[in-house]
Image 1 (tube, rainbow, N blue to C red):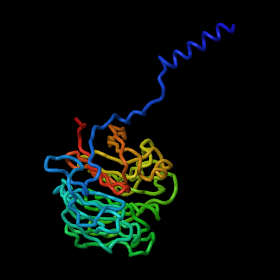
Image 2 (image 1 turned 90 degrees about the vertical axis):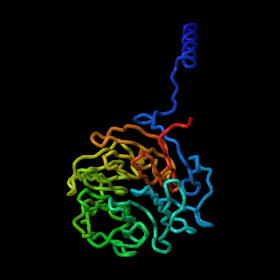
Image 3 (image 1 turned 135 degrees about the vertical axis):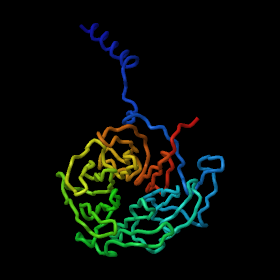
Length: 329
């Protein structure tokens, strides 16, 4: 009996050494998306030859990004960076290669958060410190303010730490109102309050930190219900349709004009809170099914995908990452 036991143990050891399949790297969901990265876009512009991270900064002397909360790209390819640093203007514009063009906003914001550019080229931001949404032209002239400065609320004229903006094909727009409230607010194209929906909770149409919002070409509304580890989907009138709870705790949503969905996400809210956007995934998601088409690792709080497939990520590490399709040679 002892001899048989010794033989069995020896066979187990051999199997562990030769035939066993030890736990290794978890595969990329949907398959690895092959991208390469410029880690310090705007602070280390591309060289004339297109090399990453080797150009001299063109920022004004003494300027440096603080925590980068958001990034967006306009139709001309200019890149807008919204950050929380003290030395530099909070909204800085670069060309597509990372060369400084212009900036604005010093003394204007409380706590920068969201940044989007509408189809007409206007620049919209959310400020979670001032409880406001602001609209600028591309030169930095203020065109519209929604919400009362430093006054939190939940009525037609106030927000409580709004997080994001999304634009419908009709020209109407939505604000996820977000950290203090648990709702989505709809406005007409000229900024008139229309209605709101949502409350705190875990049920259908309820939210725990609606952190990002996006609208597809049909007007369907997608809301990152971040702390509930799901994306909820609604009609343009705010009627609940369905939810995806397999994509983790999403930081940010981006929908391309041809309805390709890209997200920044963590496995769950616990991981997201612990990593504070340092870990996580960029994922490409099929809009009809929610199927993950591909992914890769990236820190990040905000993302924008250009028509050429370049992905800009704003990170609270104080970086803007410029991800370009392709694999190092």
